[in-house]
Length: 420
Ligand code: EPZ
Image 1 (cartoon, protein in one colour):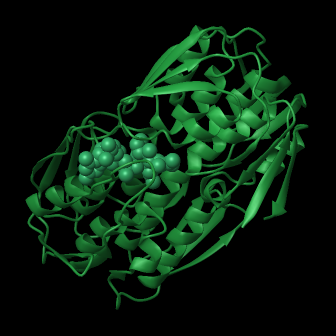
Image 2 (cartoon, rainbow, N blue to C red):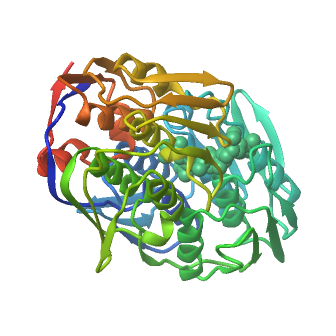
């Protein structure tokens, strides 16, 4: 298992190119199950979760080649409709093969994803939606077994206790593309990754309207063709490097960004006293010595993303005063708090809120990564901490950030990877 060692206090200077969005690429790769033709997807990040998804669709009969950010998929067989526990248990996003399998092959057996360190992650909305469209669903031996000769277009309401669901929307939208009649998804998620998936599906010949809104209409079609598509820039990676810049850059430019996808992040940063420069589709940022504290609440898009909560916390640890972060998407997603506190931060948890007393300095310490975004927060803390920060279990980072250590060392960070 690799670990990262970061010597804090080095100034970052230069440019980083943001990769394509992992969370767009995953459902889009699952969507390739919907066609008998070749698909070509560009801008896919070379991260572990993508490799896992390629194994899953591979097990389901889709051959693929992944070279320099582009994936070419070719359907080879439809004999297997089982997404096995060994793969699904390593990545919850595997659940998004359920909708496409059912729509295209009429049968799906997908392992239940199980627990997760960021809190309970049920799939009741996915199952409710498919059942409303006429699927017969059983849970047996830890697997969801779903059957439907022909899914039917229906009104499907997808709200849960924490708002809309990204992957449930993706699953139902994919299933609906080949259903008989029109499906209306209410309280649909409108995250940019859902929009990217909808655009890909429409390129395949799907008839999806209401994209970017909370009411998506899908008119079923008989068959979908292959398509070629480029993945949107990763807004969470963009936000993560923006924070790196605010904490530690002489001048850091981010390339391949979509500013419209990061408005909620920019709004909070502005409140904290950060000004960014935007020019020709790039964004530049510098170190801010006196950050104002800020209150942040995570919400479904276009609200502040839960996937940026941990990184924002690392930033607010260095603000001049008390900030409060409230988590409204995953109320238990606070595994990074105790690790940041090991680095000298002063963070107290009150239910689903974290109260952060800003400090002038963090100090390097051995810490443990617990999930993808928590790991990113520890890296950010390490960039400004006094001394060395040693982050173990960084396979979490490798699941979702493409070459993070190389990208940061390319702009001057002192960060190295070692075998633990
Ligand atoms: C997606 O997960 C992302 N994953 C997550 O990114 C992200 O944190 C999350 O959306 C929220 O933005 C991918 O896109 C691959 P949800 P998803 O269903 O779709 C509850 C990262 O770090 N819920 O939108 O699984 C759920 O418990 C990750 O890249 C139900 O109650 O999340 C949560 O409280 C981690 N029933 C809320 O909805 C359901 O059936 C939102 O979850 C489904 C979800």
